[in-house]
Length: 191
Image (tube, rainbow, N blue to C red; front, side, top):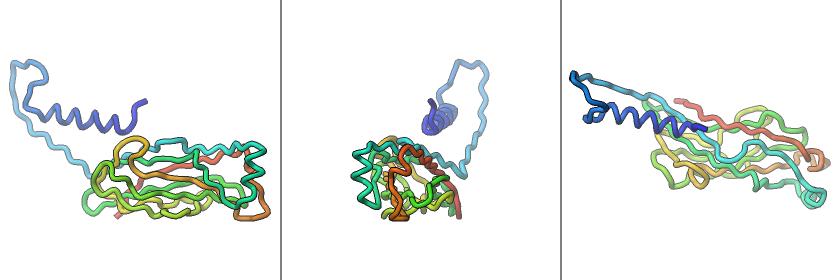
């Protein structure tokens, strides 16, 4: 499976190849051409970890967690890796969305500030404390991203943790056992 990072690598490789002074193959004719490549906007986002959160608790787990109003889904931690090129005052932000959340519950997102790996202006987290995703509405989690590279893989970029909370104390986590939450993340530009 070819990722956006691989595509970006091959694009830069080809650009470097054609801009080098070394011949690609033997030629009998020579000519010189000026090539100019300008990127005004590039935004690549890769999510490390599954964005499908399947609630699969045992009876013992349900008895224990139903005593609480909020449960951290530590086995569903994600990493957001991104590469951006921004010019002319352009910024990027990353949004999170969960289209379907059962009544009486809410998904909470915590996004850490970007790790030290990579470089550039990687932005700031807006969701450093548990922040509820509104049902079907995208929520900003990282903003003020300029030209940046976070690195690739787990441990690079932005760590995202997910929790689920009862908004109605009369509800039970057993009501959402076997439920599938599908999260999506998107990187968007803005001025």
